[in-house]
Image 1 (cartoon, rainbow, N blue to C red):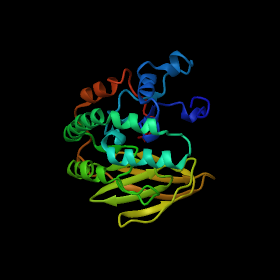
Image 2 (image 1 turned 120 degrees about the vertical axis):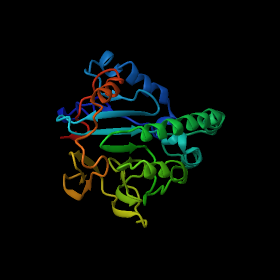
Image 3 (image 1 turned 60 degrees about the vertical axis):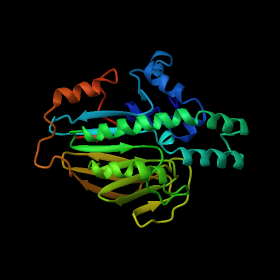
Image 4 (image 1 turned 120 degrees about the horizontal axis):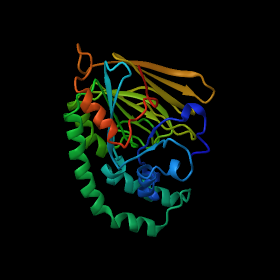
Length: 283
């Protein structure tokens, strides 16, 4: 990871979330990597870039101008979607493709199902509290599994049952996901859904009623946040712009951002240091 993403523009905090492949291995090791700042302490890449303080967490980032702020809520969808995660693990075992999953791995996964169920309940309670108490001007949620997707794995029913109602209830601007090896933009109930998972592989794409754009081209997305707009650009492997959309701010209209600047700074500092504002370009 440190060697592959070594370009100067990538020397910035990476807000990580755990996906199914991470849970196939040692998810706690990735969390410890962040808590102990091992990229700096062990590999001498300082300041530490890997931000993954726990399975789910939230960061509030004020703009440089202090006129608005963005709250990012990162959730562990593997824990929330137990059925989908189990089906994926069994599918991976039958395929024989790496990462290689053996029957004993499935048995081990099932053994911890009770703990994951308890964690899912706690996470949902935390998630609703985070959304309900947010005073941010922009509210963005990110999880590995998509809520809606026209990709090879499709929608995630458990997230549609548990997460989608909260996204709509608390006026979330966008939900960001990966998992399917596509670039997609979808919209449902006033919430915009973006899937970006085609950095290395090409998946499948079949438009849904919620679909606005989709492609299996290799590429990535950028999100440029201003006070009243967020520009989302999809760029392919050759650097060509393949799609672009501008979202309009819908929270805290008519204000100059949250008045709780001290509280916002405290939330950012709770990660151990003030988080630099480079991952999402914020003006």
